[in-house]
Length: 600
Image (cartoon, rainbow, N blue to C red; front, side, top):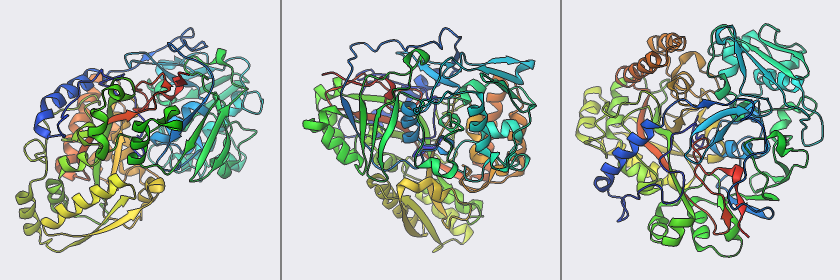
């Protein structure tokens, strides 16, 4: 799942609460001083990149256990950098949308997270995580009793049929495609198999069956053991049939979670209030301690950090969603002992920020290799949160992903974390690329602007002519996600949707999935990569599949190089002193919004 598009993540974590992670580089973020700690953190991440547990009906029964010290009442303020790119669940594949979805949407399954960050899939609107049969090719879900949407309409199996079928509609372009492909065909062929409910037809019963009002049955042509995890994604949350306004649903969705949208001013603010139709007895993972959330937009990380650190007035009741402690404020936050102990959380996120090469425009691998070698990875990640914001990436796989190998380092990141200029210059000269003009696109946030200067300067040093193009960050992935986007270079962040490389390589590097809105941002379309993805997806032995994904990762970087890894991300957030229940979520990779309350 991508980063602004922090694309989802059943991420492994290093810390689940303030103070649980040994702080590194307090003197200013020198890379050498934190290298040993980074190595240990990678081991911690690797040790936690294990499959999640599957819960039974009892684990799926609400209400959720009380959060220690929790109180009811009050409204929390949320500072947000940009607007949400989508509100339609079927279009959500980014981090801030995921956090919002945990408050207003529900699906068949969801994650239950313990105090150590361990995840268990439980039934959400369903009575359990699913019952498999036919060797894992058939999965059956039964809905809980007395479920209603915010309007009081009862929820039944027809609503879930609608939720699935509408994902085939042409207006759904930016969400995940796992379920559609598993049901109806690889790549983009699922759209040929079924045109969506707008045509007045349903998916056949041998694909999706709803034999009665409470039963949903999925039929696959191959075992799909990861279905319970996949269905936790925001993209598969319920859209009630009666209130589905199709394209318009993106601006006025209907809630089935503990909160609903009462007011929304696009680009400015959003107000959430309690959904009185939500029944805590049906929900084993969410709480409704707060009366609501006031989400205020257009606050960059520096603004958020300064305001929250000052802890005055409204800020005492304020929090971040996907904001991070700003690099410029890092030492002030670290130096505030009270804030560090009680008002911050940290964690190892599952994301890899990579520089994508638009392979329709940059066709020579020697040029791609030269750019990869020249990237100042250490400086780039420190512009996005300092030493607490990430670390240099050696691979397109994250340390949280099964199969990750820290020794695989095709671009010499360990010895040359700020780029190997001489090696890059040599390739530029050999290829005759001196003076070649390339368009580098970047988001219009302070962090991306700083990174753009660093990257452009580094590439100009090796003889390239870099034309910088600034893009609205709120629609970043929609714009770079277009096949004919007009850009040569652009960064994206991607993390596993659950602990498996099967959620990394198919969506990002499968050439059969290229279409507007898809996540193959580099437009790689390599026959060997495509065939290997298809082969590995059929391997049912987890260890064998993990090894095969790791080998494919090496092939992609060494033989094709569609994207250059730059840095892995970490999360470091600060909150107002009156915000209670804060902890790092290994599901969202940010604060766990389901348990927040006001202390007084």
